[in-house]
Image 1: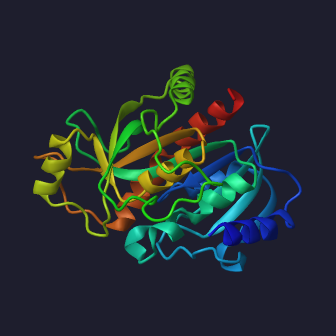
Image 2: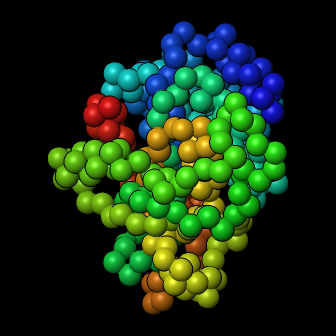
Length: 269
């Protein structure tokens, strides 16, 4: 894997002029943040050696380099999911490459189903912790050059970044929630019993991504900030039939608030 990471990073480095400081993963319906980047380079995933290709609607499949609020960033416009048939190594491979490119912070976004009774569709939730119900991406032989065999996940989501994000949200009058994210494989949306289960074990929202990427980022010592847009509700009495298009629409409606928060957070680094 190390050889692949180095080869892929070298390919990308030949096509960019500045080293990115922050990596941003744009989830379902949240790709419009890329419109605010002063773009210096765009590389389609299909052109990058050993990079997976996103197959999900709303995930456009590009690495976008440039400045956002004066900070050099690289945005993943589209991510990879375990349910697409990729291995966990493939799902998290881009995070390994971002670290090799010099990324010092990782910002992650997603659309998720809320199971907290206080949540409403369109709410923004800052992730304080997660419950990983997917295969752990660190299973297998450890590569010591990438990180330790056993990783402390006591602060999976950086408390300093979280505090700064709260400050930015309050300054901009943006309502936010905080909570725990449960990561499941998908691709089915949850049954009522499954919604009740993830709430019972301590989650506030549930989705099909994020935790594997965060685990790998922490393996390499990258501080993480993550944000969920509540795109549907798994709360008894509020559950309606949901489609992926509706998830994208709900996330897109909340995207301007998320953009303000991420841009403000960048200025606080």
